[in-house]
Image (cartoon, rainbow, N blue to C red; front, side, top):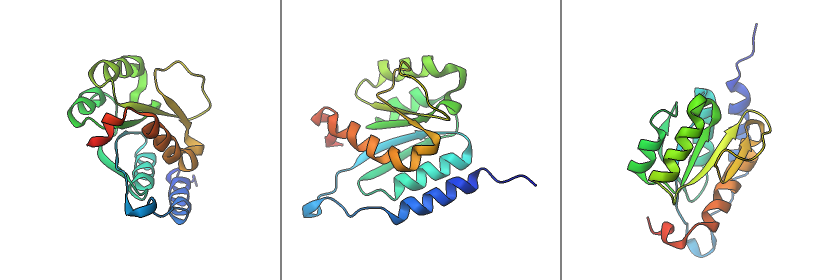
Length: 153
């Protein structure tokens, strides 16, 4: 009998939901618009759940593969794209370059199944096992460092 790989993701989502903090002081909640392209589907659902339960983060679109990611990024103009390298596949370099050309203000976070070095063209990298602890803080850091004009969506 083999274990369902999405069980670990579901457990991590539940644990992450228990640690969500209250909105920013004064009731002002910023909104970070995020487009998600992650595979496998269990990880996609888990990433979406973590982002949806995070105050100030709004998922504006989702894809299970990266073939249309650059096109959807240009259409939706998100603040941040969260893309899994499994979803991008062999077209990773081409997709990243297309996002850079078509949506230069959009920040890119790549989710890798294991530790990797820099050089993929993304602003940040998160390993799959650490996605529940590091993804939202990573997105918030990129958003804080972004051009203030991007924050007016």
